[in-house]
Image 1 (cartoon, one colour):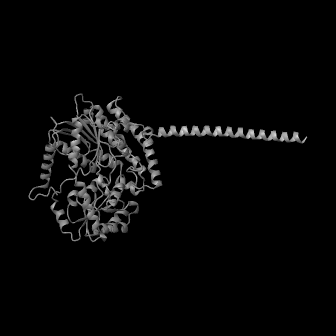
Image 2 (tube, one colour; image 1 turned 30 degrees about the vertical axis):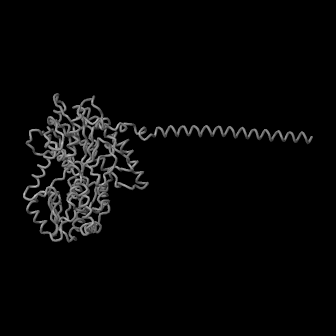
Length: 538
């Protein structure tokens, strides 16, 4: 790997390399641009993607105002950070995905709670004094507004407020409505939404479910949420501000953090790019105790983590006992990232940590398998470090990611609904012992890296492109704003069917009248013959 230089600290080499590439290969702006970056979601795995992007812009000398739930320490004179970290407390008090999943709540029940929480943290973030100060500032100016592009439409109003181009970015694959807003192909059968447990080769009933789900989203969920968001927009930005539906379509450029070689393949328009692996960094030295633990493992280590969005301390006793039973039965050592203390009953092959430097742990050669929940950032880290996976998906995009792991041959998946000691143990042993999973992980990691520039560099280049040209109107796909009926030419089909129905109806009545006339003529002719015969007989 390019960062393996003997005698030089990898982090220092990476930083110098990034700055040199950004400075030499990219067109220079006369002055650093003023950038407003808005990342509302309280999700650390998502925020690390945006942080990597922001560091790339800082390295280019731009002046940044960053609203984020994960503020980072910086004394850089060009960086102002507005701290939204209190949004995590709102989520923790109102949402527990693991608990809801263990109670067998379906996606739509979870979505109701998630939407409620989203409204709460958006209102709290907009109420921040520094945010309100920015909204009411008369001299604030920005050359571009970068927003986390899901359905957080009140945050898109900043682009209109400052009359600046808007770049949308997602930390995972975008929702269908986001792809559709900019003109990317959006077909609920070819590209099912992430709320489904199926991703490809849909059978008839799955296609029906995908269509009905999309209709529910389009005609109930979004109108309901956007009505709430429009009130937020009016309360914070005034009654003259554009409303949610049109703010969605205002986006100039879309950056989707989804690497195509993992299976995120769809036709996209010129003002949309796919990234992926944005947050990956070169391996750093592990803490001495953790390094020693991994080094002395005889058979190798199974690393287990449910990520940052899923609280492992919410696992019920049944699932805790199941995991303990599986891990005790393995010949491998198990490194378990867990959010609380747990009685291991003298088990010697399990080590528990509240936090580990995950990217650096996965880089250790003794790590044989990564057992995880299917989060995209963790999946990317494993692929970059060539570690095969066992995925236990809980919700959202995790089912699709589990499918991709299986499709690419880099691991196996076990759904929570089918989780058993035998199923999980067999999956771990299979992935750890069968070398094809490791070979496939190595090959996929090499495919991901074989690109003309690193993902952060690509994101920074296109950001500066949008700044240089004051937007990307010349790339806009005008048909994206056509109505659904016109875009899919259903109006043409409708008129054609109506015309055909009119013709068939006309032919029916003509035929009916003709047959009736023929019938009457035959009857008249028959009656004439009868009368003639009677007259002749007389």
